[in-house]
Image 1: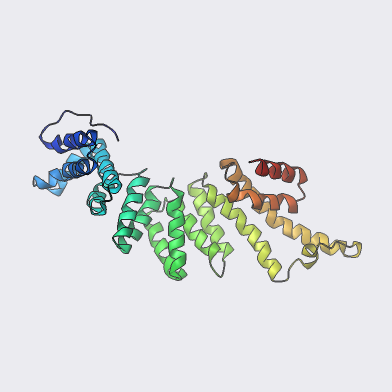
Image 2 (image 1 turned 90 degrees about the horizontal axis):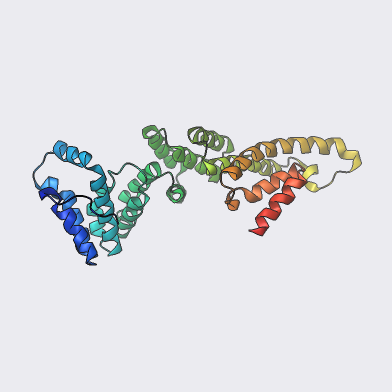
Amino acid sequence: MAKAQKSPDAIDYYNHLAYRCHEKGDKAGAARNFLLYLEEPRRRGMTAAQQDSLYKADKRVYDQAAVNAMYLFFSTGDMDGVLKAMPYGRRIEKGVSNVYITSMEAAKEKGMNDLYLELLKEGVVKCPQNESFADQLIEYYEKTGNPGKAQAELDNLIAQHPESADLWYIKGALYFNAEKRDNISARSCFSKAIALDEQHVRACAAMGNTYIQDVNELRNQGKFPLFFSGSNQQVKQSVYKKELAEVQTYYYNARTYLEMARRMAPEKYPLWGEQLLSCYKILNQKDKYDALYKEMNEE
């Protein structure tokens, strides 16, 4: 926990008292005093505008106090305290995963499901570096069993935060994971996510997967029977080659995006590894297949 940087004056009293409590090992006392410091402008009868001006003038110190209060309340099991400090933590603009993790845990423990979902949505937007928030929101929507409502809520969120690549990724993932998979709509969403964030590894990997799934679905519909039978008798060479060329078109597209994901996250084999091996196999790129297979199995 960062140390207080200023000598105390009247309005800073509780902040410095909190650090003294913490130095003595009194986490509960420290948490209470950080919260008192955050609430002091309101207790003094300042208007909302005056409070906002004060918080902005000393933003770094107030933000740190909010983080400290939430962490300490959480570490002592005081979920009511976490929720009292939460509004101050939510003012922090970005890079505050722990604020949302502790807030969501507190909301869940208190049975406040609407607040939990509100915080999760906000966390996706404000903490794009935390992939677990996107995963949790995907899981939440999938469990509702109402894809139409989920897509409508995401459309509303995207309208509010059009710069969020993660929201487009989540929307695409829901199309891709749906019982009636929609690869075309999924690709449109993943493409928008990549346009917003060229380094969005999971959108690139997911985009590649849609092309492989296209082939699987066409195969289930009876397409490419000769190619997938493993038969390439001389008499059927022309048909086989035609099927091979069509299948490879999908895998060329898949390879492009999967290799992008590999370049950005070479250590994340579960995200792109097996799918890229499939691409190399179908595209008859034995050297690349062998090198990647060896690399993955040496880890």
